[in-house]
Image (cartoon, rainbow over all chains, first blue to last red; front, side, top):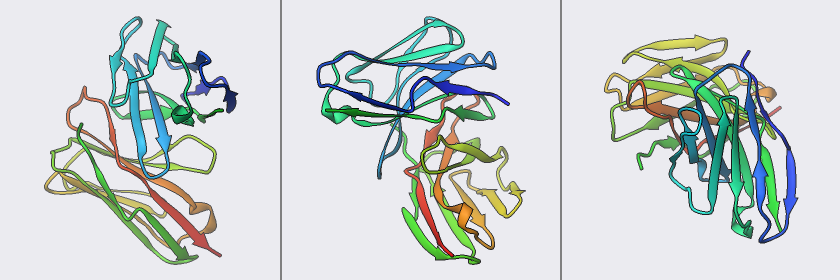
Length: 110
Length: 111
């Protein structure tokens, strides 16, 4: 089975901190994605990547950046964390048939 | 961006009841997927549909790809407490396009 691993289940950060969320997949997938999940809003796409060093903005990229230096790793960066970035962050990787998600990182910015 | 309208937003049912939920779009999709998210976990793929009119089952779950290619339905028969969670539909308009997700249906089952 494809495994998508997110480095932290829970994080608490201070306003203004630079935050790194890490995601690793073990199935050699080219496509990787970062979503944000908030109650009533479903899954909103932040950034995605179709290959190493390639990235494209999703629907809500403001305040975020990403890095894909190796095929298996896709990092989400909050340049200066703000309280409105408190949320559940989900990483996914996948092919045409569908995506496999990690367990999520619940980030709280105080 | 494109949107999927998923309904209902939430359901509170008695154990043993059947459940129906659906997704609609103004765009034509060539793939429909249904995911379930258990509390505190990431979504897990339940069923994938690739052809208009296709009806696919996975245990007590049955999903259909609408004939118009603009909608999909998920039915759960004889619900049990472990069916609790958030169900998401997702669709794709082309083979290389990214998935678009619905807002989710939160299901609660009373024993």
